[in-house]
Length: 149
Ligand SMILES: [Fe+2]
Image (tube, rainbow, N blue to C red; front, side, top):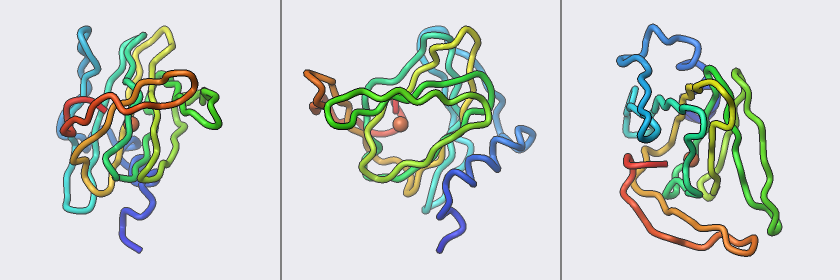
C-alpha cells in the first residue's frame, strides 16, 4: 500500500491546506482554469476552477485512477450506466474516487464559481474524449493529458 493508495484522502489533504498551494486559484472566462500543484512518479495533483456553466466533455483518464474533491462552490458529475445518464451532486466538501476505466463529465451548474482538487495515479498521460449517442459513449478523440480533462 503506497502513501497515495487513497487518492481521495490525498485530495482532501490538499483541499484543506490552501496555504500550501504553489499557485492560488484564478478564473478564466474562456475555459476552465487549471494548474498542477504537485507531481511525483506515482501521482499528480491539479487545482481547477469552474465558472458557472463551465464543464468538461465526456472523458476518461487514460488508465489513471483518481479522485477529486470540491473545495468551494458545487459541481455535478455525470456518468453513464446501463444506457442512462446519472447525475451526482457534489457540494463543497464532497468528493469521489474513481477507477482506471471511469468515464465521466463534470460541470458547474451552480450560480457561483467552484474550486476543486484532483489527484491522479499514475500521472495523466493521455485521455480519450467521448460523445454520448443513444445512451452509449463513443470514442471521439484521444488527447495528450494536460489540455483538458
Ligand atoms: Fe475527469
